[in-house]
Structure formats: structure tokens, C-alpha cells
Length: 515
RNA sequence: CGGGGUAUAGCUCAGCCUGGUAGAGCGCUACGUUCGGGACGUAGAGGUCGUGAGUUCGAAUCUCGCUACCCCGACCA
Image (tube, rainbow, N blue to C red; front, top):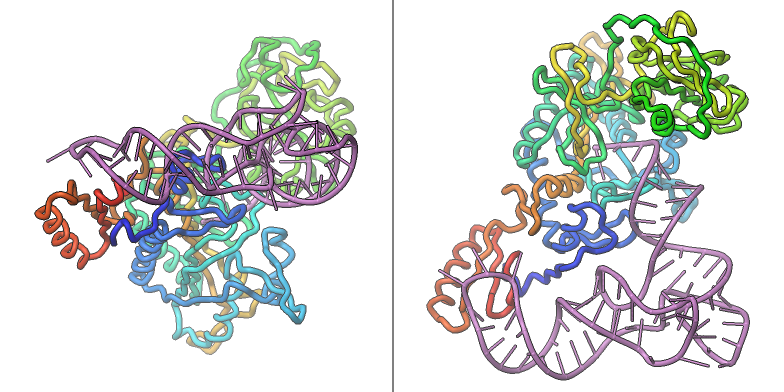
């Protein structure tokens, strides 16, 4: 390809719309152009990279024995009603009507369609195991698209779905995908980590995410190099504190703390550290509000909190009116003493002594609070996000926290969809068996962004070799006044062109250097 | 959806407060110079100032509505 024939436009200045480097560089290098919020055109240069990612993914999926097919992007509403997700998925699902008023959605994922295929096509255990995949455009009407290609509304995903006769088969299929995914990210030349994850909306039991490590990542992951532990911070468990609780040394005292509604404000006013305070959060519950108590320096983990019986899911902070009813005072001064609703204490609160907490009275806190004497000894639960230095669940190491970009997610689904759709086969004994499924996604478009986040410097993108749009850039110097240079460059160009993947810049003509 | 912000040339922005002439740099076009480390000169093209109303003799500028985009929160490959 000659530069002069490639129609590349680049930008010197950083477009105002771009926040993170990958987005900025993709716009500047002319890889993508924005059409509307969360919608992008892949320009020729960018598409070359995208196709390379796609091909590597395709090759490894094929190698793992998966079968490529292509499902429609537009799906009838009935299928989604059958799985119950027409309601569940909410506004994320882009819905539309055809000319005869039949309702459809633009597929955000394809469990429904593939399970429909499975129930129609699969009759016998002899057809199993099977793993179908596609590389296709999805649409999710994200609440807030951002970071360019990283969280766009339309994007390309590789999604695979495995079908097995039993749980063991499903686990084997899952392990195979785990291995294939690792091979893919290794071939792509990316630094990544596999972490335990919450299976969320899609459902099922076990699930793991593949994260490309990058400071701009939207997810926090906790890992430990000493014992192989790695988990999304949403899921990383903390254990009950092992230590003894120190004896009370101070008296319980109610003090004036005017306007100190936050841990930081209170800390400054009293000159004490956040870990000596107890924060009490009031959240909505199924029947009545519920209080969650954490050490002041710890952060509430919403995924963990909403799994507690009686806590409303999705987790919602109680509104000021509800807080007033429950505590009898303005938000900011809630505390467990005298509180007449269920209180759940985080594990880490168990060995706190002489701590500060709200007094359920405006502008008042207690100091010198102690369990046993002032409060019942708490039954503790896991409520908080892990922090750097926490012990791993095995107890052998300590946790590090890193940021990651989720580029892959694998799930053991079980029979959630096959049951809903009646997808079953006959086994050896002629008995009807509901299929065990797994599903496996890779964000193809997101990988391009993630690769740039991880590989760039001040002068631009440094592609991992397998992703380069061009492998060789030929820059003839002074070609316009040396026939020898022209001929040699031309010969070299012809030779390289045969092998593909090269860009020739005619310097006298274009004046451009870096491609 | 709640909170905050922005909208003027292809890109980055100034002009708006204090109404009257549409600006800069980069990019683009032409010509010339330069050509071993991201060039330079000269000339030029390019804008219904997001959109609709209002105020005014007169609106990019003041007022109101609408739309789009961006940032902070819930969601996810």
C-alpha cells in the first residue's frame, strides 16, 4: 500500500472529546471517527488492527474445537420474553418495531438465540459436546458510553456458547475456554490477569474475567503473586478478624461535633484516624431499612451488601427522609447505639475498641465506644472492599490491587437458559437431559483500546507486533533526485508487497514520516 | 435518569462580560525552497457562530426553549 493512496487523515491536537490516551491516540492516528455518542466508524487503518485481533481470536477458538456460526443481530421479542430478560434487561436493551408492529431488539448478547438453536438442532447426547461461537456486532444502550471504543454502545464481541450433557462436561468445556482465552491474550502480546468474578445479570455459578492491566482500567482487581489468588475487587472476600479485641480503656462519652457529617470532617475535627471510627450506612431493605457498619477507612462493597438477606437488591442508599425516620436525626450522625433496625457489622469492626460513632442525634457523636459494654458483640459479615495488604483467603499471602480493563469473561451458566427454553437431548438410556451450558465473551473492539492503554509513549501508539496495521514502513530518502534510490525503493516495495502488510511513504511527495 | 460543563473554520481555541468589522495557530490547496531524524516561505480556499424563538434600528455577544456532546454516579465485553 502506498501512503499516497491510503487516504489517512491524522490530527496533531488532542480532540476535546477524548479523555483517556487510547481514545485520544485512536482519534489522532485516524483509527476511528465518532458518529454519535458511543458509535464509531472504524477507518481503514483501525480496521486493519481490528481484523488482526479478530483473526487471532478466530484461530484460537477454532483450535479449541469451537464452531463458528453467525446469528442475527436483530432478535424477536418473544425469545427474550421466554427467558424473562425482556423485563430484566431493562433500558440497556435497544427495542424496535418492524412495519407490522412486531417487536424486536438489537442483540446485546445471544444466549436466547443460541439456546433456541440448541433446542431445535440437538436431539442426542451423541451430538455433544458442542461449542458454537460468532464474532459479531452487539448493541447495548449504555447509560453512559465513555472512553471511546472502551465503553461504546455498538461494539464487536466474540461470544461462544457450550453445550454439554452434564456438569462435568460443562466444566471441561469451561476449562478449555479458559485455556483458549489465555492463549489468545498471550498471542496478542498483552499483560493480563484472570480473576474470579460475579456472574451478575447473565446468571450461573462460576465465572472469571480476563483483565488487561492498565491504570486507566475501570475495574479494580485484587491479586497475590505468592499464591495465585486473583479476584475482581467486587468478589474478593475478607475473612473474620483473627485477633483479640483490646479491652475498653475509655468511657463512652457523647460529644458535640457540629457539622461533621463525613468521616473526613470528623477526623479533622477530632484529630483521629478513620480506622478508629465506625461508619454506619443506612440502606433500603426488603421490609425496613438496614444498617451496615464499617470501619471508617473501609469502603462498602455493593455486590457483597446486596447479597445479605433483607437488603434490597440493587443496593440503594436510604433517602434522607428514611434516615430521619430510622435514626431520628439528619443524615451524617447515624450510629448503632440505640438503633432499632437490623445492623450488619463488617468483619473488620470486630476488633475495634474505644471507637467513634454517630449518636443518632444532630451534631453529636460518641467517643470511647466499645462492644460488649455499649453494644452487643457483633456477628460480623463480609461487607467491604479488600484493600492493599489484606491477607489472601488462603492466608498465605497479601493482596495487591491493580486496575484492569475487562476484555473477556467466561461463565459456567448451568441450565438457566436450557431450562427456560426446554433445550434437552436424550442420553444413553433414552432419558431426557437438560443441557448444561457455558458462555464465553471477548470484547474484540475493546481489546484494541486496551492494547493501546498498555502500550504507548509520548509519541504515540507502540503496537504489540501481532496487532500492527503495517509491519514495515518504507521511507525512501531523496527519491526525487536519485534514480538509484527510486529503483531500489521500488524493488524493495514490490518484494515486500508480495508478503503484504507494508506501507510505502513517498517522502518527496508526502513529506510524512511516522505512519 | 440525577448533578456539573461545553457548543464559533477540518482540529485546538480566542472573541461574548461592555451588542454594530468573523479571528489565531495547526491542518488543507497552489507555487517555490528544503530533504540522514517529526521543514520553511509566499499566496489562497474554508464559518447561515448547534438550533428555534424573543429583546433591539442592529445579536456570535443579552433572554427563554430545544438538541447534541463531554465529565461525576448505577451497568458491562
